[in-house]
Every structure is written in C-alpha cells, then in structure tokens.
Amino acid sequence: MIKALLNNWQAKLGSLVLAIVFYINLQNSKILVREVNIKIDYPKLSGGMAISKGSDTTFPVKVEGVRDYVNFYSPSLKAYISAADLHPGENLVNVVRIGGVPAGLRVTRLKDKVKIVVDSSITRNLPLEVKFSGDPPKDYVKSSHFISPTNLAVVGSHAHLEKIGRISLPSISLKDKTESFTTKQKLPELPSGVRYRDNVKEVSVRVNIIAISSTPGESIVLGVPIKCQTLDKSLEAEFSEQEISVKLQSKTPLRSIQIIKGLSATVACTHRYDPKAKKLLPDSKPVMAKVRLTKAPSLKSVDIQSFFPDRISILYRIRPDLDGEAGEEPTEGEAEQNSEEPLPEPEEE
Image 1 (tube, rainbow, N blue to C red):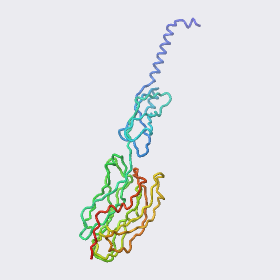
Image 2 (image 1 turned 90 degrees about the horizontal axis):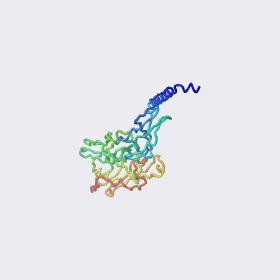
Image 3 (image 1 turned 120 degrees about the vertical axis):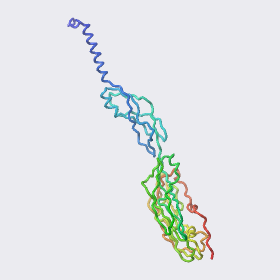
C-alpha cells in the first residue's frame, strides 16, 4: 500500500501543490475590497436647531468581504453621529457607529471626523407699523388707528432676525375719508431665511376719522383707544373691544381731537407669567376687566356723562419670544408715555 503511494510521488506532490494554488486563486477571486461613500444619518435636533447646507452628507469607508456581500450590503450602510455633539455653528464630530454591517463584512473608516453645520432658529415677535398718505377733507382728521394683530411671530436665525426690527405694511390713503373705516392689509414678503410662524397672510387696520367740532354742549366722541396698564412684559393681551365711545358735556368750544387726546381709557392687566412652570397665572381663560376713563387737566370744562363699553374681555397669551425677559416687572402707565403730540389747551369762552 505504502509502496503504491510512493510510486511516482514527485508527480503526485506536484499535482497536490497545483490544486492548492488553484483553490487559493479561486477563493481570492470571490473576495472584493471596495471604497465607498456611505450616507450620514442626521439625528433629530431640538431647541430650534437644524442641519444646514454645507454639511457633509457622506462618509468614506473601505469595505472588504465576499464579492456578493460587498455589492449587496454597501448601499445600505449608514454612518451615525450623536446629537449631543452638535451645537449651533460648524461642528467637526466623530462618527459614533456604522450601521447595517452584517457578519462576514469588514468596514474600515477612511477618515476621523465629519463636518456638520447647525443653524439655530428662534421665534421673535415683531411689531407692525403702517404709514398713511394724503389727508382727510377739511374739517376732518384721523384720531387714531389700530392694527390687529399688533405684532406677529416670525422664525429665523439670529443673524437674519437681527436685520429686521419691525414689519411695515403698505401705505393707506386718507384722501376723501370722512368716516372711520377698516381695511385688510396684505403682509409683505420676508427676507430669505425668515418666515411667519403662523400661516397669517393679512392683518386688519382700523382707522378712526372724526369731524373737527368746536360747538359747546352735549356730544358723543368715538374712538377713544383702550390701553393695557401694568401688563407683564412676557405676555400679550387681546381685547374684545379696542376703543370706547364717550358721552360728554362741554361748557366751552373744544376740538374733537383735543377731547380724544385728553381722554385716557385703561384696563388693569393683572395676569402674570411663571417662568419656572412656564404658564399663565392664574390661568389662560378670558377674563372680564373694568374700563377706567380719566381726563387730562386741560379738559376741566368737560363733564363725562357715560361711556361704552365699560367692561371688556381680555385674553392673555405668552409671548413666543421671551428672550430672557420673562419675569421682568411690568411698567405701569407705559402706554400713556407714547402720546403722539402735546395736548392743546381748550378755547375759553
């Protein structure tokens, strides 16, 4: 038996070596080494942050394994990064893991870090302003105007919102206006990178036009604006009525604009914002408030007989753009400090 095996052993050994070489070549032909760019899976961010343009979207790796495995699994590989490593601005962060790697496949990273750019969006309340063109006819004058809502919440980055201080509405013509009127104004387009938080497309503007009267006696004055007193700076107050009508008796001739500017209608806004609990105190339900009417010393000859309404409903909301102002003490009588012009003295008989 042994003698038979040893016969022509050189040829048999050569055949064995040749078979082993062929087997190794065959196995190597099934192994594939390939460099691919796999997709980066962005984490969900909170606090108004979002992944911005300019961030890396792929991560280079080397994939080794059986050819069929490499071709099949390479497209489904993903690189994961941690949300805890991301902050506003440009970040160079590590890939925490490679997902989708099956057994038998070897993945080698070809670089250490990826660049992720994060934008931080904030919400800010911007006041609305409107300009007027032309003048009412003779013996008529614009006494006041109201914009509803008075401000709007916009969303954008700090850099974008620093360039915007207020929202300017289209001009309103007062030519030939002899009566008070309400008009709808379309909101202007915001700069790129800034948007309105709510889907608001237009606002309402109420313009009060009064006749200039100098006749003494009993009269009714319309359009005396109601203002909030002692409003917490972290809150907004929406009134059910924006103005009151006043019945009065004047002993001396007075211009209507003198009376309008000499009367002050206020309500006490008593709700507060709790910055720790982040809620309204005592609650968020509408409340009834009594209107207080006062007159300037220059209207000493005017006798207030009645006014309507004497109570209004107030709905309080938390401002979306507290920006660290929550909890600040309210400013009493702040509204009264913004009069448009000095009050003229009444004409004596």
